[in-house]
Image (cartoon, rainbow, N blue to C red):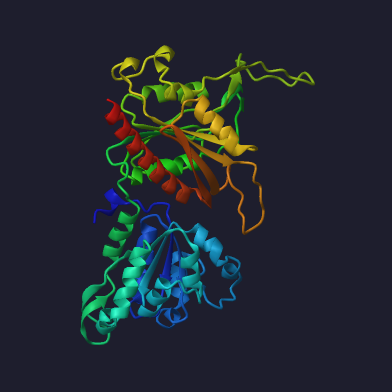
Length: 438
C-alpha cells in the first residue's frame, strides 16, 4: 500500500477494541501504524484481553490511558462510554473473539467495549481471530453475517498456522491489510470525478491597519466538509478566511481575508465547479471608509459607517456573476450554475429562518445549525462556533416540495461525512432531472 498517496486517516479518531486472544500482540503494531498515519487512537480492552497484553503496553504506544472494565484510573473513569462513542470516527475490534462477535451480533452490552459499540454511530469494523474449528462453526458464521448486515466491515480472517498448532482459516489478518481496509471505509467514492468548491471560516473587514470586524466562526465545519468531500472522491478547492486550522492534504487551498476577496476568488473558481458549498461565515457588512492610519482614541464615541457586502452564495445560486466581474478560463458567460449548498448559523427560529433563506436565495440545499448552545453539561456538549461538535438540520428542494433531515449532536468530522453523503445523493438526483429536461 502506498500509504503516503492514499492516506485518509489523518486527523481521524480511532478506537481500537481488543478482546481476548493471542493475536492481541499484533494490535500493538496496529495502534502504532495508525498513529504514524496521523490518526488519534484510544484503546479499549476487555478483561480477557488484559491477560494477553498489558494495558501499559498500549498506554506507552498511544500516549493515553487505556479504557477497560473496572478501571479506577481517574483519567479513564471520567470518560463514559457515550463520550467515547461520540468521539470516535471509527471503531475497529481487533482481535475479535468468537464470544465478542456473538455479543455484538445480538446487541448485548455487558462490558465497556460492547456498550461502546452499541452506543456509537461511527464506522465499525471487526477482525475475527480464533481457532479454525471455532471459525467454521455455524453459529460464528451466522453471527458474522449478522454484523455485516448491520453495516459492520469484516476484515478477514486469513489462513495459516495458528497458536494452537493447527493450520486453517481463523488467523487475524495482517496489520497492513487492516490499514488498507480501514482506509477504504472512509472512501465512499460518492463524489468521484466531481469538482467541489468549499468556503470556510470567517472574514476580516478592516477598520484601520490594526483593527477589523469579524465573527466567531472557527472554520472547523468547512474544513471537515472539504476533507469529507475529498474522501468521497471529489477534487476539492477550499477557499478559507483566516483560521489556524490545518487543511486536508491534496486540497487546493486559497486563503483570503475580506468578503470582497472571497467573492472574487469564488467567482474565479466557478468555471469547472459542480458543487458549491458555502460554509464560510462571510461578514454581512464592511466599513465604508477604511482609515489609512490607526484611529487614535481621542473621543468617547466612535461612529463607523458600514456598507453591505455582496451575498456570495446568492450570486452563485442565481447565476448573476456575469455583472460582477470576469471569471478566469473563458469568461463569466461560460460558467454553468453548480449545485449550491448554503449554511445558516442561527440563534433563534432556526428551521424557519433556514427555510426562508432556501427559497429567497434560490439554493438547492441549506444546512442550518443553532449557534446559541453554550451547554457545559458533559453529556450535552456545546455546539456550533468554536466547538468540535454540531447538530444540523438540512432542507433541500425535492421537485415541488422541500425535504428535511436532522443530524443529531456529533463531532463535526462525523457530521461532515453524513452531510457529504446526502449532498452527493441529491446532486446525482439533480443531474438526473437536468438530463430528463434537456
